[in-house]
Length: 265
Image 1 (tube, rainbow, N blue to C red):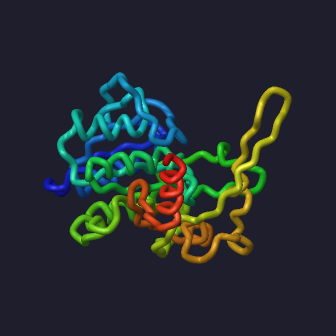
Image 2: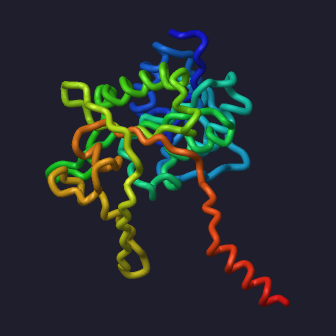
């Protein structure tokens, strides 16, 4: 264990999920790890924040009856030592594409850390649904996260000194399931693919993310260089990202504002 490296570990699947346990065991080999994670599943809550959340002692650290963003704020401001790095995951299920960046609790924890000027890594496991089994029917054990823990531990141990976080606020890492040999790595950008649909059924609306229905490596429409293309083809995707928005100052908006001013005269 490296005494000088402090890591705050959280997730959105809940503190009792196998993904965070696997990461805790792996990261503890290279760092001092403080866990502050949701007491229950908080998937897809984005950067939701609570005004107050109960804290429960847990064998891994602290379970918070709140969201991933709650956990990062509580961990950084109160519950843990000042960390060098925040790690979020490992999520059971991939977080791919631009549209998930504000939706995923896993990624939102990393974004929250960025506002504290603490570098972060968000790690997710791509779990392909095969045959008649849906994603929810696939059971993940500690061994399922072997590839994810290996790359996350490596990044945690070496990324800070490499200078990566001088250019990126956080890394969004998506990892394929282990297949016996270490997967290759591709530096990627988030896919722009978006295909949400809604169907009215009586008084209810069913929302469906159709993107996940097209994850065949031979026919995937996402171009090379994107996170989805890399993971579907069996590679680890690492997207270096900034948080959360940038400003595009341009003359078109300036002209529109000037028209508004003229309108008021």
